[in-house]
Length: 288
Image (cartoon, rainbow, N blue to C red):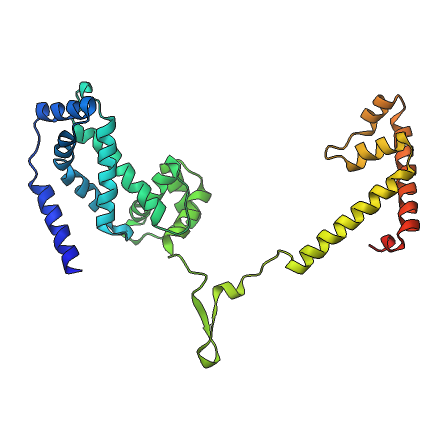
């Protein structure tokens, strides 16, 4: 632990002691890195801006994640900025890199702050990183606010729905809860976990197997019974009852050259023939 703290202190000290770059020197290093991939140029460009990474990372330390990890992610953003920087635009590298550093750190926080992933749209990110500040601002002086009005003002300020604000507020108000955390202490030191109280609505394995067997059996019965239908009856039953996209009476009537009422009569007659055939061949089908 002590060695790690010492390494971090030396790292921060080295970052703070790194010399600032003049505009022309900074531009020259950026050009060398972009055109020839000069690693020494990239190292000097990055080293001179590590204090910027540390300063930005420090703004997010209250999210409970290790400062070293925040700095590391900020460094990733710094390198991404170096890869995309265009020196000819006459913009200082620090101005350009700030956005990439902040974006990299924010993405890391959103991925790791909670075991439950939240939205990653720009509006959701703005809500996540500004909700606490806006809530504190709106309730300054101890003023009590109705939740609906409170959420409405924040939603309008950020550009999201009230429901989004309510959900995010609930996430930020409480920690993640493990399903394996004990909730009751029983006899002999035994305990019950939250997982024990979750009800699964899925069928049991034996029920799934039984349903599969019964389904296959009914399918065989139906295929055998279809043999009692004539060609027109079979076509109507297939297109009206056995197809994923069921045909209408009118469309079938147009295909067969008969009225839709006649199609309905043939369909009813065919279904009755099927029912009788199933019961005669498989009496148990009457109750299956």
